[in-house]
Amino acid sequence: MVGIRVFNVHYGWEDCASMVLGALIVLTSWFVGDAGSQTVAANAAIVGIVVLVLGASEVVDLRRWEESLEAACGLWLIASPFVFGYADAGTLRYWHFVLGIAVILLAVLELRQDWELSDAELAHRSGR
Image (tube, rainbow, N blue to C red; front, side, top):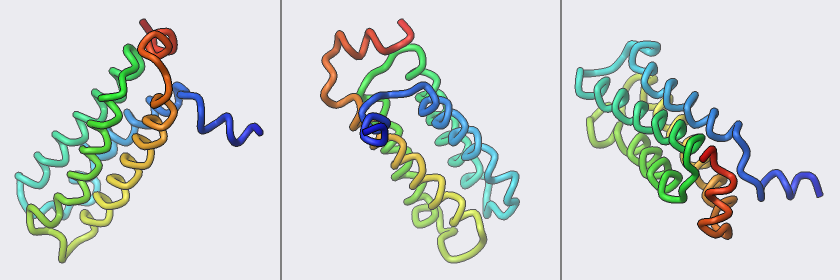
């Protein structure tokens, strides 16, 4: 029974995990060091900052659209190696695949938890 409850309640650690994932995405280009161009590094920085800000905004005001945007950021991060042409070389593509999947899974979990809640229940569970 405890395992089922974990998937039905939106916990604060999930928002913190989103912020950590966002910070990791920002830092991947510098950690890995094989970003092919400034565009690749800028893309990772922008996506990471957006994920980080969305995670922080969930702490303050819980909304369903935040999880949807996080999932879109994860999908973009997975598609980025193909769009920017670094899908065939280097380890940065693996980092972006893994981090993108992690962002999507976390966003889907949070969206599932918040899907059945009314707007009043969302407001009650958020930091407002």
